[in-house]
Image 1 (cartoon, rainbow, N blue to C red):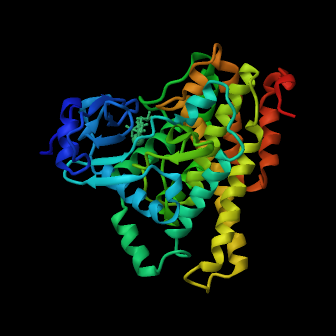
Image 2 (image 1 turned 180 degrees about the horizontal axis):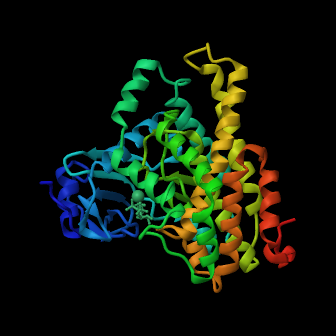
Amino acid sequence: MGYRILETEDVPAYLRERGHWDDLEDIHVREVSDGNMNRVFLAANGAGTRGLAVKQALPWVRVAGPSWPMSPERADAEARAYEQVARVAPDKIPAIHGYDPGHYALVMEDMSDLEVLRTVLNAGASYGPDTSRRIGEFVAQLTFATSDFGMPSAERKALIAASVSPELCRITEDVVLSEPYIEHEHNHWHPELDDLAAEFRADTRLRTEVAELRHTFMTSAQALLHGDLHTGSVMVGERDGTPVIRVFDPEFSFVGPIGYDIGLYWANVLVATARARALGTVTDHAAQLRLSWEGFESEFRRLWPTRVDTFFDDAYLDRFLRRVWTDAVGFAGTEIVRRIIGFAHLTDLTTLPDPVPASRATLLLGRELILRRAELHSPEDIEGIQNTENTENGDSTTECLVP
Ligand SMILES: Nc1ncnc2c1ncn2[C@@H]1O[C@H](COP(=O)(O)OP(=O)(O)OP(=O)(O)O)[C@@H](O)[C@H]1O
Ligand SMILES: [Mg+2]
């Protein structure tokens, strides 16, 4: 690939070379990569009063090494997504100080004073009043601006062409939207889920519904998406007494169905709820689907009068939002299923003392979301299934249910 792969000791010179740190101050660097794919370094001065983060894509998957090559152009997709969001929702992403396409490296705001939402939730804390609403708003702001409602047709066509990301979309098409429903070496699960994994593979009705969602993912070029909007892609915290949220890691960004971003977040909310129920630490979990949808819908409707193509009328908006909702319900189901019987699992469930009951209930919920998405019209409808799935085999867990 012919570019310099940065090691911790290279970062100070790199930052100076690129004009990000032009004084003679000492720079202390530590590597904080904890994802699967890329390297992340944090640079700070001795006094800790100044910090920057550097994220570099390697020509392979970081945790696998050169035996699993992966185009570093995923960093281009990440930079492009940040550029689009910066125009419409700059307060919801890290400040980007520069992208260096030659090294596939982004220099951005140091967010080490914030915490990853999944970590916060796994530790038993609540979401807080604004988190999910602002995530919904983030999706609306990014997707409206990059849809045919927010962007002139020719500019949109150029964005679609520039954002084609075959390698990363293929990962989603395989790992999320097909492998869990067939025999595949990637799949694994807790032995006490053997029966459900086999049932899911044999379920032809389920497979056809997943095929439809997969085809929607492949063909529905509605707007630029984040592409990987789970609770590990959101940082939360407080600065000067004000709540702060930062959505990050949009390397899977491409032009696709808006319901995919919303559904991915919902799946992670529902899995976090299952964890909290198992541990008896439920707080504000039940409100999050509604809050995120309301954040999305009200922001999208607020932007609607600014649309560039008024042939799209108000009645069409209602129809469009209904479709986004239904897609989101279905994609939430596929994300749940793949996180329990597919390739990559979630610490929300794997770190439970006994992951089996919560995993079984959540897996069944995932299937219902996929199969019944057309008849589920509200967060309350989804809550209704959640409560049913918690009583699998008559083993009622009613005492843990949220009021
Ligand atoms: N700007 C930043 N400031 C502080 N910490 C950061 C920053 N960016 C990333 N991190 C830390 O590095 C981790 C990995 O970052 P990120 O998720 O962007 O990398 P990735 O390799 O794409 O991960 P994944 O395998 O999950 O896709 C984050 O979970 C976070 O802990
Ligand atoms: Mg990533």
